[in-house]
Image 1: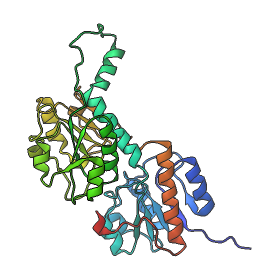
Image 2: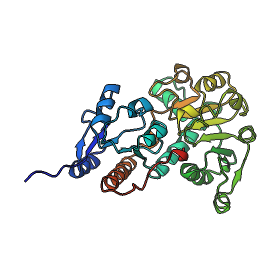
Image 3: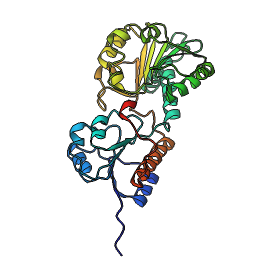
Image 4: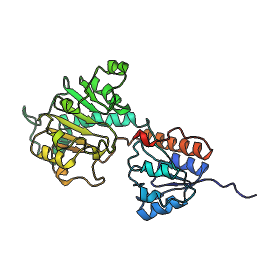
Amino acid sequence: MARSKKPVVIVTRRLPDIIETRMMELFDARLNVDDHPMSRADLIEAVQQADVLVPTVTDRIDAELIAQAGPNLGLIANFGTGVDNIDLKAAHERGITVTNTPGVLTEDTADMTMALVLAVARRITEGERLARSGDWGGWSPTNMLGQRLWGKRLGIIGMGRIGQALAQRARGFGLAIHYHNRTRVPEEIEDELEAVYWESLDQMLSRMDIISVNCPHTPATYHLLNARRLALLQPHAVLVNTSRGEVVDETALADHLENGEIAGAGLDVYEHEPEINPRLRALDNAVLLPHIGSATIEGRVAMGEKVIINAKTFVDGHAPPDRVLETMF
């Protein structure tokens, strides 16, 4: 008896073992065993062969690539919440469905955002380097002074799932919650978080002690925090970005940090990943992480489970639950 033909699912990067094993059971899964980033040629071959492509946020699935897709490619099941790596318009014009993995990374990213707020305000990584250097001369009243969080104002740019989860954590540290969002959140959420809404981003920026970027990268948010807006921040202000690097003008940020025009920055994402601006790497008042905001075992497995559900639902002839529409981003 001939074996039943399973849909070809090509995965661009290594995923947790439990996810890859389930994919092998359900699909004709082509895995990236050595976890090398796929070259452009690799991606072209993948879209020509696959029924379902499972890229990650670092794979550029642009209009040129989509134009070379084979006739069987029906679904791009992105392993990630953001879809700025995919040309949604080009995909939809080719009749290719796009899905993502929303909601599963909320708590992990909010944890990391709060960790960066603490690390910058209390100079934690700078202190850790001093302790390891052998140059620490012991405690003194004025050594390594940072900023107290209690009683400060936190301005959140993007009050979605992650922004709200951050606000819940920040309240426990005595921070007053302020936010700017494309649309105002429901009154009950504002009441629960005791959050103050600012329609004007400029006005909010000039009054906050801490700014956290939690909005997606879209054409409208590219360099949302440009040189003009960064100049609105107070000299003692702290900026944290765990969203997308493109939202912040890194050159302008480096200028402000070098000149002491803001106190510090905590970054988990960068404008030209994996490259990091060397000026930022040289600064003690910049805490830099290698895009690990969502890097928990639980989070990665949950992402993979969503990819599997989206792919299985699609190949069974139904609308996948996490379909991304062009108008959503």
